[in-house]
Length: 271
Length: 272
Image 1 (cartoon, each protein chain N blue to C red):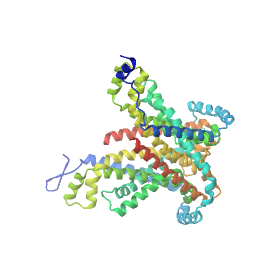
Image 2 (tube, helix red, strand yellow; image 1 turned 180 degrees about the horizontal axis):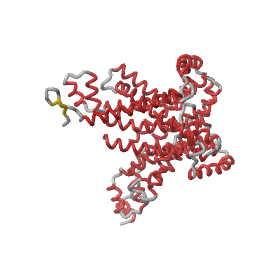
Image 3 (cartoon, rainbow over the protein chains, first blue to last red; image 1 turned 45 degrees about the vertical axis):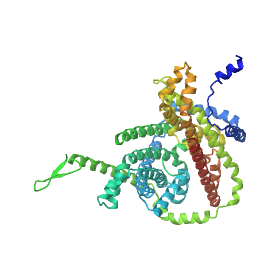
Image 4 (cartoon, each protein chain N blue to C red; image 1 turned 135 degrees about the vertical axis):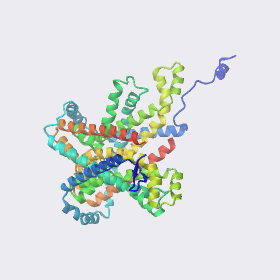
């Protein structure tokens, strides 16, 4: 028996199957990606001397995190955080209140086609526009202050909540809704007893999640003049007061963690 | 069963006991009071004259913003390319950093659940809770304005997001496959490469594309704080009140976002 036949009998060694089975596609994606990477990286001009200069400042910021200054701008920080929280609460409440009817309208199984299209258009518009851009436009229209931030986040909440609520309604069990209908209920009773109990747990969970997102977003709206802690943060960075900036960021991180923990508890309770 | 008694002594079924009803009403009252207080604060901080004037202002801006100045498009191709690069390279950089963090944070792969896992989880929460605009603000102060700052901002912001989803995927893997590979006498790294990685690969690809889509949206506005991309043009047009240019830029951003969403939906559809 020659070695060749022995190898033929043993077969080839096992090789890990590639992630993309088609070799032509795999190689063209690989080479295309490589060309793009070279082009992209070469088009970024990094001013290394400036970066080197900045590294000491970066280090100052990192150390500031271990030595945050809550006190010297304490009043501004408190006002900013309070305004952020106010914007968060009002915009979440109003946003959810508005997104319930729009969500109902955007669910194909309960809304007639014209209503469905209008509501879906609102959702698409709200989702496509970045919060910051909406905030810029609303600040131009309504003037500086928390009202613009409140309107921005309410609008953003509508897109998020309505879409998820509508998807949830579209996936609901038809049997329960039909049972309520069979008792001769009116449309409102049907929604209240047939649809609402099925989507309520998820709606509460999503509301908590959105509260969390809205707080995070409200922290940046101040950059464009829409109220909240962002303006204070921007000033702190502009004046290289990294210890104050670190204090603000720590407050944001802790608040977000607390909200996430709270929403975890509430979601575990309702689901 | 909660019941109330009518005047003639008959028992009537009720959904809740009296205490439950009172507690609920108290909770509602507190919630409404908080909301009204918050609203009052907003109202105090608002110049209502401007708000009543808003429809006229909006109409005025609308009138000046239309039609978009299409000729300005020539100045936008460069920033658009920068925006795409910030999103793509930022996502790649984030993934490079997120993968080890995810393996350190997942309960079944972490080397030490007591010391390393909390650190990894803190990195995830900290990078996730700070908006990319704030990262950009910080990085512009550190490395100077430009695409590089934006790229780093996108990367840092994305670490937490990618690592969180990835470590959840790692925790949900099928342990049988890992055991099977271990039983062949594979080393720790071989177990990881052949037992765990193939299982999380689809999730990983999905997460990357999903985050890339989000990053396209975010990188369009990073220029507002000086971090390069199309936001820089938006900022300068806004500052000079060149509303027709603003309209064009908004249209371009909207188109970029829609294309990004379409691409990511296609790729995810192909993977899953």
